[in-house]
Length: 77
Image (cartoon, rainbow, N blue to C red):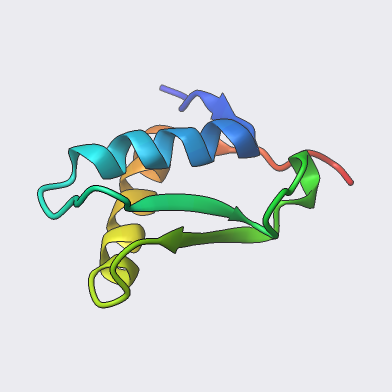
């Protein structure tokens, strides 16, 4: 079965929803699009806000889990 297709904004939103369900989530953690203030196809990646020591591994886990269920379709420039 094909995975639902999501755009850049939906991907970031789904990652943050998954992040809030992560067992190591702490208040203030957030996944953000890069560059800050991106618009659609201008998204070049994602970054995070929160405790530096925990976030890299958590972000990788969260993004991988979202990608298991959704396909990110990048908008044309």
